Image 1 (cartoon, rainbow, N blue to C red):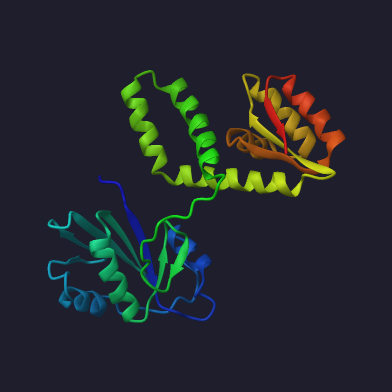
Image 2: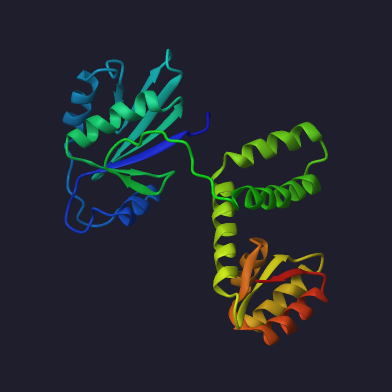
Length: 259
């Protein structure tokens, strides 16, 4: 199946449910209580009568349409109180008119990829890149490339894997984490510092045991922290303690930074 290019969730405004959190819950398949009812049958019939959706197919709780000229398609599911719509290809050709139709009929829209409510269809603008963006991206790509090299010997498949990574939500999450780490370093530039585990090294289980002892974490939490490195192990500790922790972890082969 083709990769989903965008996903929009629509529901009717009601007290306490006009929030991003409601959108996140619906995207995860968790339906909050007391969502307002939607006359979806009538709504989809009206949608089919609107411009660009004459070929909309409605099959029970599922609907779909394809725009071959624009190389775009959508499919959606009708649930109790909301609609979940996925877009493929050049999605804006269908997503924008659908958004305008649904919001014109009083529905709220949550954009799953952007994790925000849309009050109007976003207009493209050139991204504002701060001075540290390129350095952060280089660190993220170098780390991921090292992991890919360990798992995939074929250079062509490695290149494809890296291209897919740059377009993924994982890449955006790691860039955001790098930014948070930079901000943590700036905040902790005085008497206290953060201890950052950059890589666990070969003695991963021993590193996990040390982190559990230092933080009081359960095994699952400590393993998750180590697997998601770089991560903050201890935040806002005195430099003397941070240096002792750093020495202990580095003795196990881990790569650690103080920021």
